[in-house]
Structures are given as structure tokens and as C-alpha cells.
Length: 160
Image 1 (cartoon, one colour):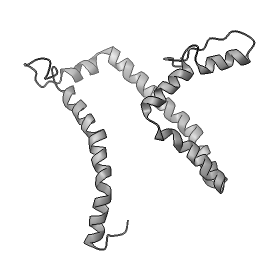
Image 2 (cartoon, rainbow, N blue to C red):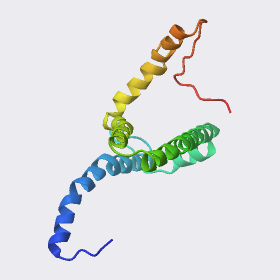
Image 3 (cartoon, helix red, strand yellow):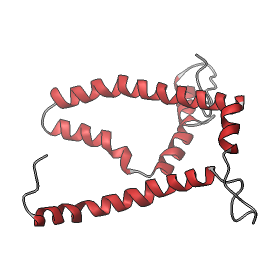
Image 4 (cartoon, rainbow, N blue to C red):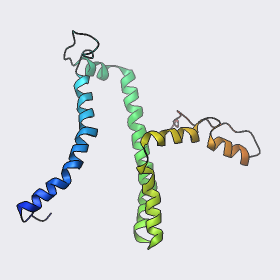
């Protein structure tokens, strides 16, 4: 990155970046640091007056097979989702960047970016409506296919 020539440029850059850094601090780093702080406590301070600092929570996490299983399932799910996002998203991004030109590129890019503008809670409820038993996906398949089908895809993971 080029050197900032004057102190006025540095002030302008600081002024432009301050809201983003404040938002990151309040919305991301503050809650994460609070979770880290509470993970070292014996109990929540508002529940009991005799709380203190401990490493027992981390010892339980490291020694309990339940937490190990949950950690493995979470990591496996995260890697699987990442793999499929790369597998699908990278070729789509290459096609969008190299092959499609003009207004079509702008339209497709907007269609890709548009879901990120919605609130995550709204997105979660929308997926719940689509994937639940007797939801949109199951009702559509019932209307198209001649036989009875029950999907109920909510809270399921593949058994690989």
C-alpha cells in the first residue's frame, strides 16, 4: 500500500475507518471476549455471590467424551459446508468474473449478494419453513411426485 503523503490523508483515513472498527469492536470482539471471560468463571456473578476463576470448565471439556463427540461433529459439519461452498462457489465466481459481461453480470452479482443483506434470524426462519416436515419443499414434491414422500429435513445430518 502506498505511503500516506500528508497528515490530512491519515486523519481522513482514520475518520473513515473509525465507524467500521467501532462496529467490529461492539458487535464481534466484545461478545467474544465476554464469552471467554465467562468460560473461566465457576458460576455467573449474578447467580451466586461466591464465584471465582477456574480452569475446571476446560478440564471437563478436554476429558468428557460427550464434548469431544460434539466438537468432532461441529468440525466435520464445518469442513463439509466449507468444502461444498468452495466446490460450488469457486466455479460460479470464475464464470461470473470471466465469462459474463455487462448488465447480466451486475444482475447475477446482485442475486448472489442480496441474501446477505437480510437479517440472519429471518434467513433461519425462512430455511425452517422450507425444510420442516410438511414445509414448502415437501409440499412441492408431494404435488409433483405421484407417491407419498416424507422428507422432514430439519435437524438431520448425513451419516457418512
